[in-house]
Length: 393
Ligand SMILES: C[S@@+](CC[C@H](N)C(=O)[O-])C[C@H]1O[C@@H](n2cnc3c(N)ncnc32)[C@H](O)[C@@H]1O
Image 1 (cartoon, rainbow, N blue to C red):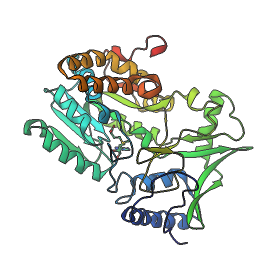
Image 2 (cartoon, protein in one colour):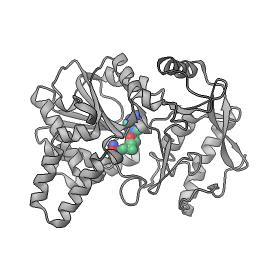
Image 3 (cartoon, helix red, strand yellow):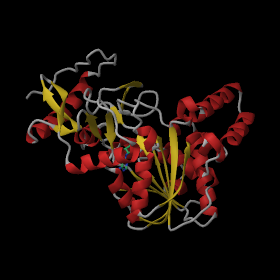
Image 4 (tube, rainbow, N blue to C red):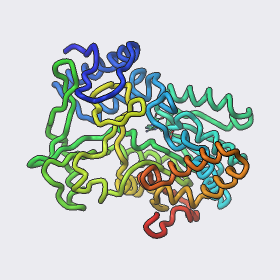
């Protein structure tokens, strides 16, 4: 089998990567091809996604592409506005005031902006630990934070390569779980798994029989929610259980705050959502073909928050609540903060703040699609922002 020399976009209107990017991607294609050949011509989509995002030196997160901001592929909440980090900082301050250790552990810290905001709103924080799978982002975070912060603040930050043995404090993961590899399942008479094969110089889909544990997991969902229709395609994230188990083992007395786009299970596996939730991002364009541009585009799936809550409880956490991002931010003082900053700013700053508030909170933007799940381990702290009130929660 030979790797491709250009990308067949099959009608998708995306910018063509430059020569260097194609060369980079071709290196990854060769690695994926070798894995496919070794595995008798097909690998599970979860394995493809793992390599496309995290293959050392080549994956989207582990290679050198610009991922954030105007030149990147997507814009996350900490990039949209410092108001987001201020809200998390206030939530953290309220937890510390009730006796939670003044330490933060952030998963997947992106450009480092959220870390900077939280350190600036919480001067008494003792330590800020970052655990990111991406060595390239880790370097970027170090450059950005070293430039921005004074020495005292910068020295509080520690980059980890694995979970700490005994963590006390606040764990934050913003848009991390959506980047976990997922299985893709398709229902005909029974369930098959969609795998990735290679033919005529491009990756292609190929069905295969799912392993027993995969089949059991999707059938358990059907037995809870009702049988899904023929022709239904969905994702299944089997990394949640081990991730929450490892996190629970690492946490001693901790609060965990997970923010991501996703649904409760009844909506995630709704019979009308027949094509799943997988999205790909390339230079600010969203599309649905994960098999093109391996290593150059982001691939994500929405988060099943019931599966998270089940995995978290199985690991030993108690659930403090699940609310919309809109509710969480407003309850943590977003509007008051924006109003105060507006009063001090000029017209342009006021307009920008108002746009940021809209993007973070409007139901048709991030407000409802993004949710916040909070967990506690060996703590019972008050978290009023996690209490749902009416339909807005
Ligand atoms: C979409 S980015 C979000 C970055 C940042 N949190 C933000 O909001 O801008 C996903 C990040 O999660 C990291 N990541 C994914 N899975 C992870 C894991 N299991 N542990 C640590 N980091 C992870 C990726 O390397 C990447 O930095």
